[in-house]
Length: 324
Image (cartoon, one colour):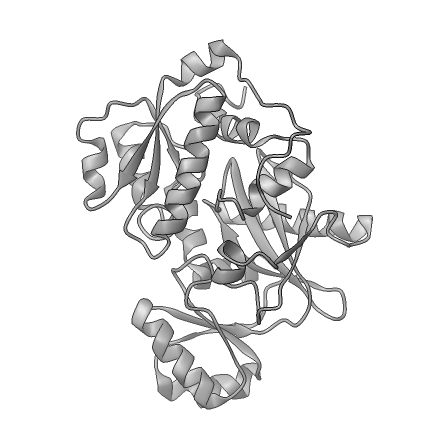
């Protein structure tokens, strides 16, 4: 299933009075993170959809000093389509908030927390939400102890990267050392967690509502960068294949995770299911992809929400009376 717009959902046209209230909208995209190329694709898709809905929007490729984006702004609000460091970790959110410029998505603290996979898991654990057992790894000397405590197979992740960048599945101490060394070259914080064998699901959130869950399957070892953005053989299941009661349970878990991290407006929660049917939280994404392979637009479409309506609803929450 591709993520292009279906003809069975009519093009969305926002109320002209609403689009006037938005004023001039800058779509921030690109950036300097490892996810730059994906962000450019997301930003261009968002920009096109906003313009199609009648919004006065233009794109900004944010590179270099982020402070320059607010030095002399010629816009009234920002749709953040920046993925990864700088755009998704609370940095641009803090700058825009300090400048008094409304922006889409989660605020600084929730963005920073969600971007840090290790500390997000501490929050999950502290709130009693199920997440795979884990350890922070700080040196290759810890490999033997971690293998003994968590037992292979394990997942090794840079704690501050998105789009599955740098993630490796390991089964031996030697592989753990190698994967740690690679991850540590990308990040000063490396997360090692128990590998959950079973189906993967993702739940998108929009304005406190859980959209239909998507089941994911791929011939890759896991749903990695290539499977997310490049491969055409990744299988997306909507309906997700769960019994109705189990899907409700999955959606509730995603909402709980979104709430305890402090997120707002929109995002996505990734979850695994083990052989016993237990769900396990992996992470929360506060600025998910909006490319032609992306999951939030796919879930929205399954709920009868076109891409144009989706981006306008996300932008709508930047207005002061959005929650009235």
